[in-house]
Length: 245
Image 1 (tube, rainbow, N blue to C red):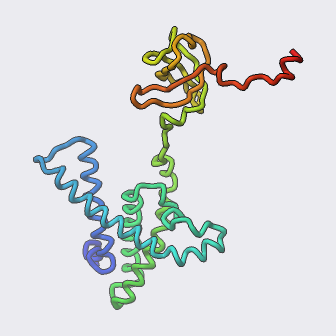
Image 2: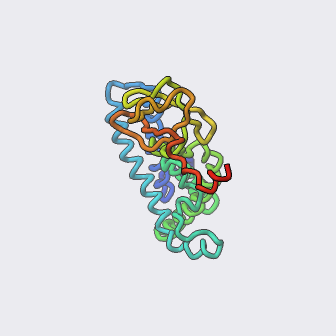
């Protein structure tokens, strides 16, 4: 039996169809990245393939999550949190589903071809073929997680700070004055990056270049941070401290 015939035999044909859909999906992804318009029909075809790709990848992920109940007991024995999603537990949760599903399909297809060649699974009954397909999928899932582990940093999502995350921080005024409609300051981020921000103060004349100010709010209307002189917001010294001075 040649490779093409083996690819069309059950259960390998299931992985073959999935691989073909994934291949066409990635082809349209590449064409989209290159901004190539083939007869004006790429967008429509890409939309259709995205739908088909989502269906395939969703089915694979659903099959993996279907085993979550059984995996919870094993996870407890292995000291792994039983509340963790199985897709995360096998190492695929931080990767795009299209990437992880493509790897699972490729490994599943390869495993099914090898099983047919060395195990003569083509002569088995339908029920046994289904068991073989399920076993191949269960092996392909963690193996895909292991092989794709070096790619995790590439797809790591880095959440940037929002405007309100800087409320409560201290900034340094860089303009000659700050009022309700004008002002600029610098602030140092947690990573050491110096940011230039627009600031406003409803008490004009109290802040000048080099003064320290405390960010108390972000005004979305003026698209600027509302600041107050830092000295005004510091606690007053105790009476005992005044007398000792």
